[in-house]
Each structure stands twice: as C-alpha cells, then as structure tokens.
Image (cartoon, rainbow, N blue to C red; front, side, top):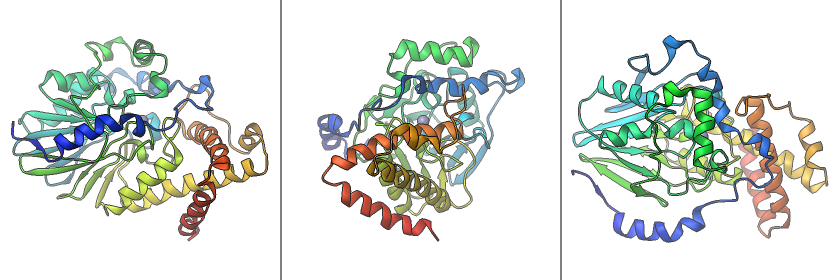
Length: 363
Ligand SMILES: [Zn+2]
C-alpha cells in the first residue's frame, strides 16, 4: 500500500491511552429521553418520491472544490434534516472518501458518484463522526476494500439504547429497501483520538480531533494543498450546530481551529457550501455564544431550566433536528453546562473568554 502514517506508532499508542480522557462529557446529561430520537431525522428522506431515492438514482450532484477534491452534495435548505454531504480526495495512490451517508443504498450511490470521476481504488474511508446519517453506508466502502478511519468513541444519544435499537429505528424511517445489506462498519480499522496526518499517493490530509464538539468522536479533515476543510457537523448550513452529543465549549474550540486554517472552502456536514467559509464559522460561533450568554445569565439568576426555555420557540414535534428543535435541545444542554460552570473554578475565566469572543459578534 502506498500510504503511511507519519505519526502512527507514537500516535496510536497515545491515542489508545487517551480515549477515556478525550471521550468528552456524558452525552445524556440533562437531556430528556424523548429528545434522543435522532434517527427520525431521516423521516423526511423516507417520504421522498421513489425517483429521488438513492437506490434508483445513478449519482449524486458533485462539486469540485480543488484539484482532486470533490464535494458530494446532499440536500440544501433543510438544515440537518436533509441528506448529509460527503466528499472525496483523489490521489495517485487511490481515493480517500469522507463520510459514507445514511444507508447502503446511499453508500452505493456515493460510490457510483465517485466512479464518474476516478476508477482508482478507494483506500480509506474517514468518518467525521458516528451519527447514522454519516456512516450507515460505510459497509459499501469496506466491501470495496477501503479501511475505515474514525474516532474510537462511538457513543451518541442515537446509540444509547444499543446498536440493534438504532438500526431498527433507522430502518423504520428509511425503509428496508434502502437498508438492504446493512452491517456496521464504523468501528475504525485505524482509530484516531489525536491529531494525525494521513499521506496517500504523495498527498497529505491532516485529521484534527477537536474533542467533544458535535459528538465525542468528531474528526475534521483538512486538505492543505487545496485549502479545503471537511468540517462534519461542526458546521451546518444554517449556523446552528448541534452540541447535544458533544459540548458547546468543544464546539467553540473546534470552530476556532477550523478558522485558524484559513480555509478557501469549508464543507458543512449538511447543506449548502458557504461562499465565505469564515462567515459560516462566525455565524455558528455567535449563535452558540449568544445561547451560552443567555443560559449563563439564567443559571446565575436562579431561573429554572423550564423558565429559561420558555422564551425559545417550541421544538417541532417529530422533527428532532429541525432548526427550532436543535436550538431548544442545545439550550437544554448548554443550561446544564452552565450549571457545571457555576461550581467550577474555571467558570469566571470561561465567561470572560466568551465575552471577549462576543465582541466580534456585535459588529
Ligand atoms: Zn451529526
């Protein structure tokens, strides 16, 4: 194989030791059980007319983001509810795919899409995180000979009742036909729990581990020669990244790292590719800072969680990742984080840091 891991031997040894530390905060803390049905996010997909279904379409829309770097476009204008984005990088040594979409049928359509550009073997599949809409098509790539690169921490709210329950919930919304041939393939062949560099065919991809931002198992992929970043669900087209499985401070830190790359193009996990990546990063950060400020104030003033939530629009019934639902679920999470902050010694420093960052949001 033409690839090698510059930091593998040291990196992986430390990674294994550090998994517990990097796992992030308890995912379900303070979040009502009824809000954990992430799988229902795909309900809208299941309701599509048959001609739009991935088992009947030849290829997904593509956009070239740089030399040999492609975005496979999901739905736009639907926030987290639509089909997610994926991508791939072509190198002389083979192809690296980023995310595998939501089902074997979607994975097959993604592979057909890649084949419209290159016949080279797919060497690696990198998963940005362990939500089903990003990895339930992974088995297709595994069967095609790819090795899976992912964070070893697979925990999410969607999986807390066990893998079988997650699959049956997901099958319920996507339909058996799309899920035919499904098997889990998100357990990494190469677990990445700290920043790692992948080199394939002379091309470098930097894999960042932001650490508990959108989920405990996030990876951000940076292609330096094309200045393209694949942000996973740290970025969503409408600026509301969900932190229910991760943490708001983790998200803010992750966004800072993405911004520091000065990307020419940033691929969000869902929706339209922004014309100006910095603008979407800024909007996502400011949305989260405003929520943290509001929840911090309420916690400090002894306002109960239900009263704190009263000013927000209600969550949409049966749409757990609609914009309103995301905002409200984030608020529950952030309120709990602010309660922790209140009793934590670094709380004052965290609040100061937020208010400094907020200055940029008021311009
Ligand atoms: Zn996600």
